[in-house]
Length: 539
Image 1 (tube, rainbow, N blue to C red):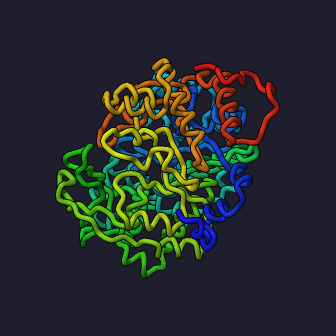
Image 2 (tube, helix red, strand yellow):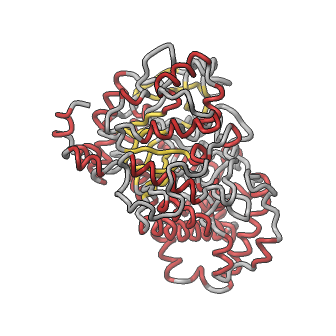
């Protein structure tokens, strides 16, 4: 990006870059990508438990200033955090049960007697679905019995969040009544939100509606506490906002005018990606597409509200599939693959101008991965947001790559991999011989044992000029394919990885802290002041 752009642009990233070289070095940051779901815990899935607070302490010990997580919304079919029942609600699975015990809303026996799955390294979503809500319902009933749901604090929460919470809680209650079926299979009156039907269902299901309101109260109370703890430790949270919402969501049901739906409130077309070298039939995501003309007429008010909400949850927000704001891929509804889709024009900078007008300059990261056209690059430049660089995309022996570190500019975020990539070790083991040869030549290091090769790439990312560097936890642990979080366009076996208790050792934290200092991504520390700060560390 030309230096002149930094001088005239008022965005947050360019303001940061418009300083001398020494100041720029001080702003270099490092962080770890670790889903909340992947944290250790005794109850089947990572949550806002003491282990989460311990992880924050470990980040601090490791010299990190950023913790990147995946979307926090309630997951639906397929367990993907990118297909949620609500863009505003939080996932009840993340409510810490031990905190509810401490608050007198559960007995320890309620938790220990439930079957949440037997593995400490994987998540069993089926068992969670069957048992977690039963335990949480006990907590809700006890809260009501103790008068918690009548307190001023509780009522203030309901009022503050009413704009989305009222529809979400009713949506989930009605969904339960209809056996979990998608809202397009509900009775016509409630499907089309006939006012009399809304009132009747809300009254008939008021106990269930109250339960889902209680879950959000506990989710937000616990998350706000954890985030405040992280911020006090000097750790900022990078959140993730999926560009699309799920069709089977409170958002689509409650506000159909936001989307390209027909008279039956079914999608006219759905989202996805075109065929490419990775998939001959493309990717069919199935999300409803936005009616951008409607958003334009309303001044993008829903987007402003959505992004404002994100910055109540997070310190920095990564916007998924950024190129969709320039052009989005439209696939005819009911097509079985993405072959017949076409590109249509998105809102472009008009949306981000509207957001900036209402909310000011915001620390946003643009997920600009995949095939980028000149117009997408122009949108990224005009926004001033840092884009993403992924090392695993860099080593293609057939062509020069923008992902090779010597091509970076400071205003970007470098990753060794993302939640959609294999781990570094898994990726390296699967590299074609000619690509592996290129990678070895680039690093000029042929002596590293392949069991330690991940550290070569972690160091390569950290010493790049990128202002921000994020390393997935699995790469720091040196895991192979067993640590992969998601394989796009597949069902089953995704989103289930968990870190074993004690895996993030003091030695590993010390090694990360030392590297973070060496590559100028942290405040200088007194040598030898932490346990295990040898650059050798654990592997």
